[in-house]
Each structure stands twice: as C-alpha cells, then as structure tokens.
Image 1 (spheres, rainbow, N blue to C red):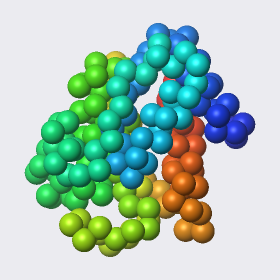
Image 2: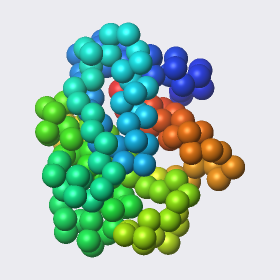
Image 3: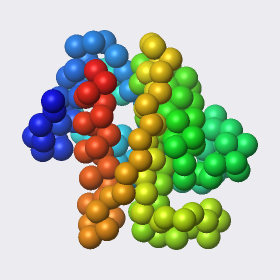
Image 4: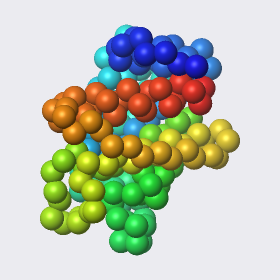
Length: 165
C-alpha cells in the first residue's frame, strides 16, 4: 500500500524506484500542460529516468506524436482509448520503459471537442517491457483551482505508477 507522503516526496520516491530498476519514463500530456514532466524533472537526478515529455493540447499534436485520428474521431480526444494510445505512442517514440498519456478537461468547455462531462481526466500508462497498458479515469475535485486539479492528477498518476513498479 502506498501512503500519501506529499507530492514532492512521492515523485522523488518514483524517480528513485525507476533508477533502481534502470527504467525510464516519458509523458504525453494535454490537460496537465506539462505538470507531470515538471514534477519529475524537479527531482535531482531525474535525467537518469526521464526520457521525453511533450504537451499535446491540440488533436493535431496528438496525431503527430502517434495517436490515431480514427481513435480521436471514434471515441473523442477525451477518452480512455485516446489516453491509452497517447501512453503507447510516447513510450515507443522515446524508447522508454513507461509511457504516460493524460487527456481530459478541467472545467472549461472545449467547443472543438464536445464532451458530456467537462471535469473528467483519462490516464493511460504503458509498460513497454510487458506490452501492457493500464487506463483509469477520475473527476478532479470541482472546488479546486486549475493548478490544484493538476496537482491532484499528478498525485493519482504517481500513486498508480508506484503500485505498478
């Protein structure tokens, strides 16, 4: 079981575990705007485990980095399917052990991508060693600021990754 020890320590623990296992991580972020990459690279020595990070706010950017246009059109850019493809595409692009894809809306309606719920986040995590994906979704606390929601998202992703390691 993973106990909450504060996000900075949580991320530091993640980086240390990846170092110990000689594994790497890359991220393709949308609604988090690079917050996960920032949290990881704020840890000293993260260069040993962090392969690549990209913010793909637009559908076209996601497609350029390997997400299928068909997936976005069929399931929406805000979907588990898109998050899964984001995680797989970035791991393959960067040649990393783990790929993380994050997509969703944090309370602002996107007229180009209509969605039933505008406060749901989808996360995909791909393990290239086992060729397995894990996908989850959740709704950040509506009472939080945008920055607070991003922190909550990063916390959940890091906790999930630590359980996988």
